[in-house]
Image (tube, rainbow over all chains, first blue to last red; front, side, top):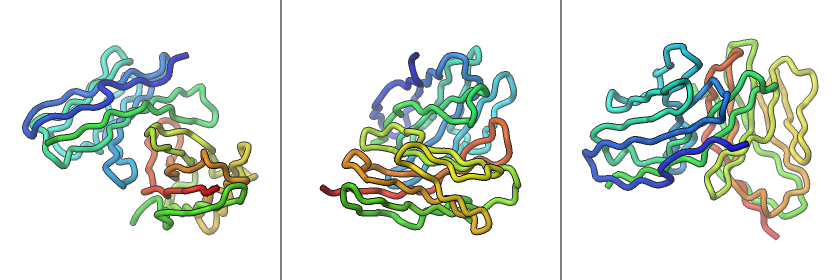
Length: 115
Length: 115
C-alpha cells in the first residue's frame, strides 16, 4: 500500500510568514511523529500523536510551532511568523503496534527555506 | 549528556569491503530498542535493523548486522560487502521503554563507498 506522504515537497517562504506542512500517515497507523532535520544535523523530535491521547509536545522549540491531527489520520504542522532558523527538512513518520519489532515509516520530508 | 553518540562524521570504504559504523548510547531504562536508519541523498529515512535490549543474539538483516555490546552500551552497525549504493548518511537511534515512545537520533555518519 501507499507509504507516508508529505506535502509540499519544498516550500520557500519569507521571514514572518506562516506555513503549514501536511503529513498523511499510513492507513491504520495510530502513532504519528514530527521531526526536524537541520543541515548537517541529526533528527530533532518535535511532537508525537498517539491515537486519541493528548499529544506529546515536549519537542516543539517555541510557541510559534503547533500541530494537530484530525480524525486520527492527517496531521498538519504549522509554523507561525517563520524565522530563518526554521529552515530545515521536516520529516513525518508513522507506526503501528502490529509491527514487531516496532519500526517507523518515514515520509519523504518537506524542505522548508525561510528567506 | 547525549543519549546517542556517533563519533564518526564520515567514513570511507572500498566496494566489497566491510565497514563498521559506531554508535554508543546512554540510558538507565532496562527496556530499550536500538535502530539504524539509512538516509540517501534523496532524503528518505530507510529502516535497516533493530536490536531490543533483551535480545540475546545480535540482529542481522542481509548484509547488515548489529554488534550489540550491552555492557559497553554500544550498538555498532556492520555492513558487509559494501556496494556503491550504500553511500548515504546512517543514523543510530534509541527508543526507551516500550510502546510508542519517541526515537532519539544521533547526528549521523556519512558513508562513502568508492569503486
